[in-house]
Length: 172
Image (cartoon, rainbow, N blue to C red; front, top):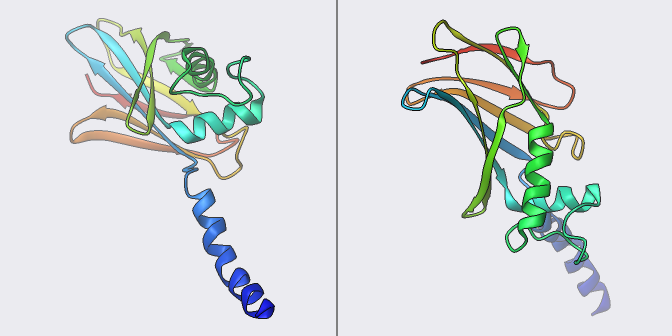
């Protein structure tokens, strides 16, 4: 009987292990779009909440009043993570490296959204150079996608740890 239980445990161990790790997606999506009504370039980072909380544990930050960060229940933890996102995202407009203004964050479903914006030049092309290194300091297999534009006019860049910035034109 003991051998049967041990054999069953060995057979089910990979299933249990993959279920436990299934929550970590190791994937973020950033969308950058020009808003002609406001004249702003809007940057929206979509991050799985579970990954955000896990990264705060790894980085030993979050709400100091609890042992583990709670992005959903703690505005302090959410803002700590939003600051992390803005530090790990490089944004260059033309020849100038710019730190976009932080607008805020919110949780929708299982995603944390972090919003930034910067004023677009009134004229000329919007040549951007970007690099998303969100979570690459936490997980070696992290993948970050950055979409320039919206609708059917989108260019997508994919970044992994240590990748160089990429350049593209943002449609007006």
